[in-house]
Length: 376
Ligand SMILES: Cc1ncc(COP(=O)(O)O)c(C=O)c1O
Image (cartoon, rainbow, N blue to C red; front, side):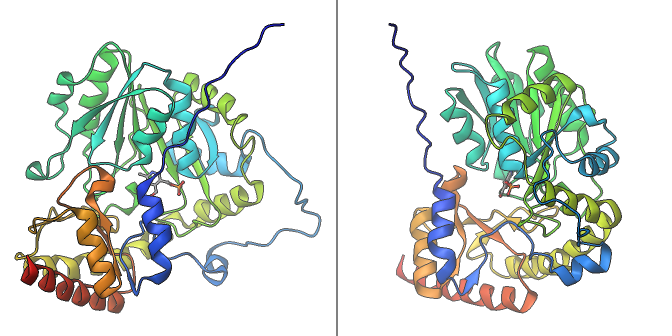
């Protein structure tokens, strides 16, 4: 009898999540999360009908995604149902994509600084990481011309976020088209995670439609529907088919009830939800901009184009984990260490809370930074 040995796949720790989960419950000023405050049922009802008929079966499932959600996504992305795989958050979407396109020994190129799971997941699958720098000095822009320095015949995927997590900077279409063109010369795809794109304060459109570009997204961030946790992959059909097949190994089907609730509100009120997001985000960014201007003794920053996060550089000579731990201990303010985005000397600050809380939080940040400066 033959015996087959499988090496087990150990899931690497995601420092960012452990930091957030450990500290958020004790934070007075939480400037660490990347989602806008959740929609209440009252707010939902102002736009759409959340209730289901008495005969709606809670046993209902849709292995290939709820039709209602797929129809809504077709109009959001000008795509067809065969381009769509619905998922449980963008986390599952990204996982399906990485595991469908990357095998052991393949290379993937990933923007740095970046969102930790987007390199830890493919590395866990045995793929080899190549870093593509997005430099602070260059306003965190992707320099498509430099991609040729990193890409090889082994590269299968280039991984980007738009808006950029952690800086909130928008990548323009021209840049994405030239990245995609270089990638296509090597037979590689480009993943653009657009989970924050609808939060852009300047006009921006999805990159889906560029032939070798795959887009992931979800309703968890900008729309305030995190608890429903619906997400999606929008891809060329051959890639969508692989992701759909892979989904049989992850969640099988995502929550049908969530998908229906997500579809109903996005269909009629996506633009109102974006407006709700901006009504919070824009005045807060304005406040933060003034704060940053008058606190250049602590930070320089690249102003975000939207979303609710930014990635300023601090002037103190200490590690970002030490800096954030110290700010947390002294002021109960929670911000994220840059090292969790693979960039020392920076912190990620989110500004999605109510304006008075942001004002108090920035006062606390000022106190914390002053005291650290006095001791360094
Ligand atoms: C770039 C990016 N992609 C994906 C996710 C995870 O999204 P979801 O909550 O929809 O799984 C996050 C969460 O912060 C993110 O920043």
